[in-house]
Length: 228
Image 1: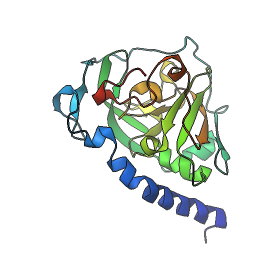
Image 2: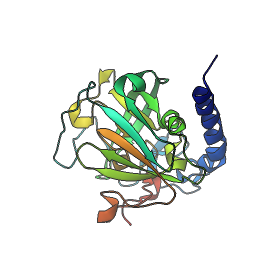
Image 3: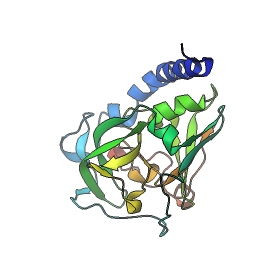
Image 4: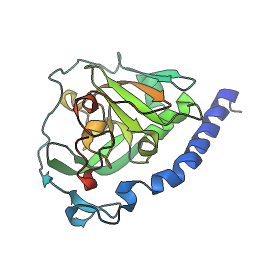
C-alpha cells in the first residue's frame, strides 16, 4: 500500500506531464521553422551547432568567482513558493528515480560542448514532489554562491532537464557545480544553476542574476537569443 502523500505525488506527476505536454511540443527548440545554426541536425531536429557557437572538447569554467564547498552530507534542496513545498536531503534526492541522458551544453559565451553523458534526477520528478499550485508558471533556481536564474516551467519540465550529479561517468566536479547542478540542454547553459540549493515556484516570470543585467529571459540558442 502506498501512502496518501505518495499517491498525491504520483497524481501530481501525471497532471504536470499532461498540463505541459502540448506546451513543450510547441517550444522554439522543437518547432522552429527557421532555426539558426549549422551542422547536422541534433536530437530535436535543430542544427547541431547554434548560430554564433563553436565546438570545443574543453569544459571552460564560468561563474561568479565563488566555488562553495558543499558536501553531499551538507547538501539540501528547498522547494518553495507557489507549491506545497518540501526539503530534500542528499539521501532523499538519491532515492528519486535516477536517469542517464546524453545532451549538449551551449554556453552564451559562444562555445558548445557536445555529447556530455549526464546522470541525475529529472526536474519533473522534483516538481511533482513540490506539488506546485495550478497557476505556477515559472521557477527561480538559486545556488550556494548567490546565483539565481529563471526558467519557465514549460522548459523545465522537458525530459532532458536534470538535476545532475555525474558528468561523463564521474561525480560532478566542484568547479562545474558539484555536487548537484541543473542542466537545460535546449536553452543556453546559464539557465542551469550550479550548486543548486533552492527552487522557487512562481506564478509569473521575474529576472535572475544575469537577466537583471541584460541577458535574455528565455535564452533560446537557435534564435541567437542571448540578450534582452
